[in-house]
Image 1 (cartoon, rainbow, N blue to C red):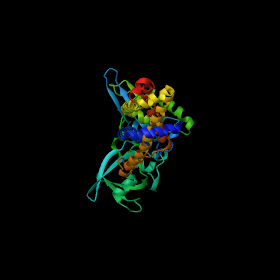
Image 2: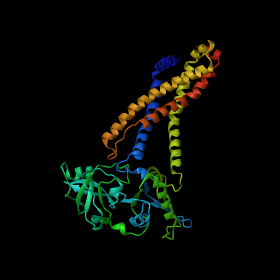
Image 3: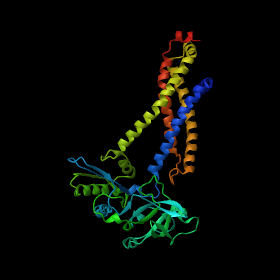
Image 4: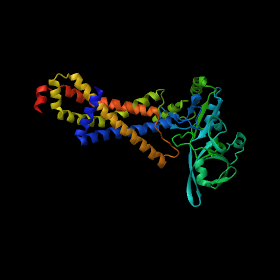
Length: 411
């Protein structure tokens, strides 16, 4: 039976090629956008380099301060003092990686401007994060305490500043009229991982603002537990510390600060959320976006399907006259519509591969490499199935309601 339905579906698609083109284009275009966005979200959420210990890490990235009387609101990263003095007093974390948000800078090489994003870190940063060193090694605690002008740079920075030379360890780079000695070169990190991305990593003692004793600044932290079992205890210890935190500024009377999992921490910043329902809210927003995004092509396909039904009214009348039930006709039409959407889905997958390849080739986002995995393909095919069912239910119901006599008159 399915084989016959497939043959009928192909015949119907060939009958009105323009409508078929519009249907397939709407389905494939919609799916392509969804797949590319899903690949991007998957890359942001699941990419583990250099954050390979994510299962036993918590992230401290943003503090929110509010004033109930003044109406003031503040949201931003932390000062080095806060992370070192207060977060550093916690007992459960095995190590705490502290780093600044990347700071924009630039230099000139052979009269050509080279952008350099500076990132300041402590020594434990290199133990908590697992950067792949192409050459050399990171700076240590003694070099940080001595405020030595040493640096770790990315592969892209090495190529942009020094060109294609075998090794740059021991060589100097000049940024803002200051000379830095290169200690190591690490594999590039995509900018979609802003907590770890940088072109040039420097000791935090070279950043003049690190001595500021306010709570806010330009730093974030990763708390590393000794084991995955200690993560919840580490979060509880952090929350207890925040409850006891003295409020230094009179304009504010409430502080919100969280030690979250990676995606929760990322979404908390994106949504400016101070509740414990960040993931739930993000899921609701994404679901609503997908439903609204699918609404227009679904309505378009419904209208096209209704037009096709009216053209096939005589066929429906004949089949009903020979005993075909409404249930059988509905089932046939739904199968035809699902076949159409799956065909559009296959085209969408091919288009997605081409778009992703073009994005990767163009390097629109530095060091970002998108790819389709089995999870994304499964989600895409599921979307196709849902899309086919949603756009076929109403037209199929209309078809089943056609009166036999009226349908045969159209013959």
